[in-house]
View 1: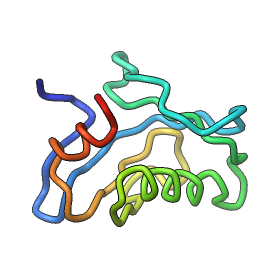
View 2 (view 1 turned 180 degrees about the vertical axis):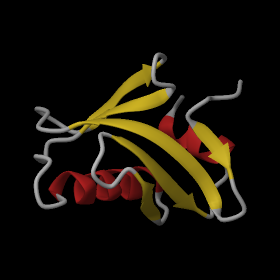
View 3 (view 1 turned 90 degrees about the horizontal axis):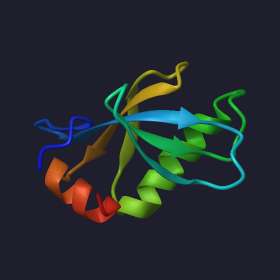
Length: 96
């Protein structure tokens, strides 16, 4: 099954996410079909890059890979690069 929010690149997988900051706890909420992105709740507030750092930490820990925000630094809609993993490996690790 191909997920719209995951794409393979030469450097790794691109993961399209929609971030909801200031949540009670960090977690994956599910797929936002309308946006075609994975919905993610993050505890950190969206100030001074705190939510961005939390997003990177959350996915790095969960996937055991180097994660970098490559798009949407100041937006709730972000693009993450997961280095060294294929889209299929990311999908399996996230249990999607």
